[in-house]
Image (cartoon, rainbow, N blue to C red; front, side):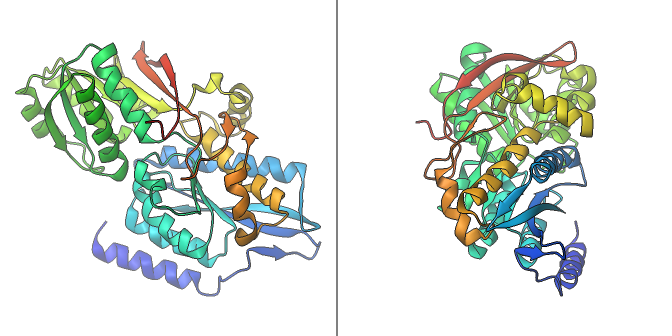
Length: 389
């Protein structure tokens, strides 16, 4: 996006925000109170499939909550999802965060990416608005010390360790090339994989980087080919991972391909097609059908929205957790219910929901998958916790 486009986008949002300073809870003529919950993810662009997945997961949760009925402070409440598109761009993320703050949302589900969640979290913290990300896994997100910042997915400290050890000990590779997309997520995960692989006895023969907008990796891969790796790890998303593995094969590189949760998607299978075969990738959490509420969630979600891409169950749990804290405080005012979030203990679709002192999910798991006959198949699940040392 050009500077002019970003400037124009900023002005447009600023103008649209004028006159939209609203109360966190708005009454209606029927006596019902409307409470706005923000949701931010990329709804356009190459990551839109993941962003809409989050949006639909949160929407499903609020629809169910509204159907059962919630009363706060003696008044019936209707929850409304206010969804914004940050285009996976950190600059736009802060703009839409300010817009949600102006709209006086009671809480935020999002953002999808670590690189957008981190700068936006500063805005929400300053405004005192709780934020629960369903999918931001970078360690830095909850390392800022904000009492408003939470996540319901295991972070990259554990994911990186599992991937690095798996590359050496289970896949039997020793010469590892690492590429990342220079985002908070991609680079952060790659850093953890590098440390874990070295600790397990592997050798890093190349460390390269690209961007989260690139699709031509021939120069990087040609350079890597000369180093004769037996595994290439990519820290980034499916829109880059798929053409990367295609180009890797076109150059005759025989190395195995390993990725994180940004690669472990149905979209990757579609984009990479036959070149996806044999790719290994991880995803925080249990496989969907092994989650406590996974099978029921799959039935409800697919009936309404179709295929689950990846993070929808976590967005659902994030929304349910925000509302649970409000119910415990008997208020949708952030200043009143924020204190309930650290004390939350509830059974979520994805597993038990409870937070440590940083706002990370307690416990958690990492599952490894491999593409076999065009489908992601579970290899194994490693239990642990986001902050395990």
